[in-house]
Length: 342
Image (tube, rainbow, N blue to C red; front, side, top):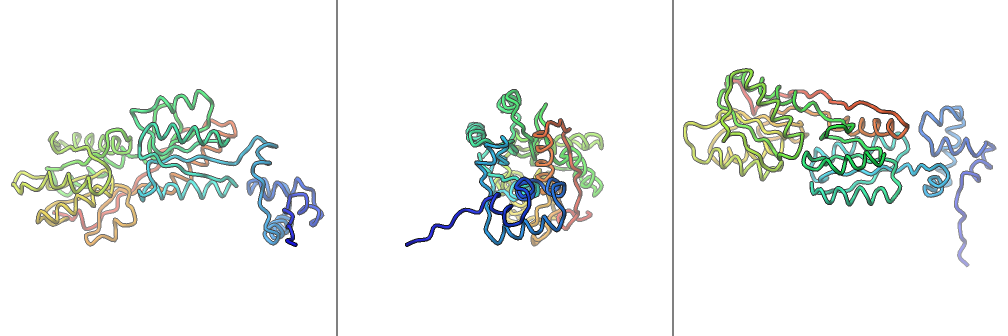
């Protein structure tokens, strides 16, 4: 006859340890601060060790019914195949775990209807809040609707008016790229501006163009090109710009993310041009691959993991009744071979 093993509960742990069940609950289901307020370090360790030994698993459904807290957070991003978004999500997940929350993520491929569908499904699961990484400038109405319904939410990577967000200071990053290329002596500069619905590309391009104007550098309209953010888009734009091989070509290009820049570098190679010698290239985000390319890529670094971590921290402030301000994290310029002095 098969023996049915009884489930380890908070009450059974409390009985074995000789402590109150509420103390066990605060240690195992609360935040680290709540645990420290409930018990000494020695008691905390005893509770945690016994819970591990007996394979205790919290009953999230029961906790939610009793406290009206599911300790679930829904996260929506365009895609996780994008290294930038995956890194931001790592920060989100780390912060959630540190506060004893569980996250689950949905991808939308930047389709507005998919954003709406996922968020509503997440709300059906009684999430306490939402982290939104796919905000679009042409689809803010749904975010406004969520706010009117008092749904706690924080935007990461991209921003939108009237909503709390954590982003890189993309305008400043664009200005830094312009300063770097102009200081190298470049006056014929092209801009790969990314998608026109994402504030990441819009702000980086705006900062770059603003600073070029201040420095009396004219960027011809045909050298300001919108496209996807991926390497294939960068290659296609690069082929259009440089395939003619004429003399009146850009000597430098700022791409609003590293993947665009990497695709561009492939096109330059195929056109017989040497990156860093014939054409300087600057990307954005400083993804790990940037420094490991055969010609290392100069890039504006954005604090991707920190962005995700702070997103959760601000969301938990909102859930607790706070009204935190949006944050813009400072970028950093990493100069490498792709933009050598002329």
